[in-house]
Image (cartoon, rainbow, N blue to C red):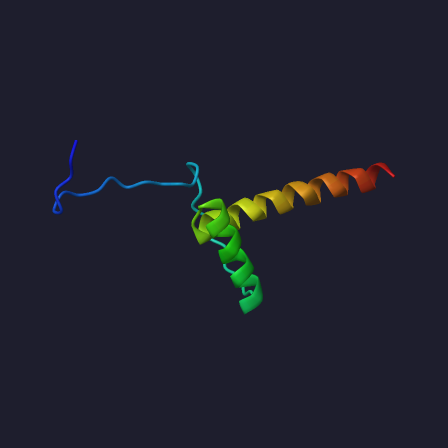
Length: 71
């Protein structure tokens, strides 16, 4: 199937259903550059990369908190 230049392109969502809550934060230029580097390496958007790292950080935090509570 070919697309001509005037046909609408399908909308692609890369976030799971229900991702509607926005979070805004401030980062340094160095942190932004690192985030952009990771996004390029992962072939993801900046937003998708930020979400991925946030989720990984929460999982790590939960694991460390659970481990500390057992000590």
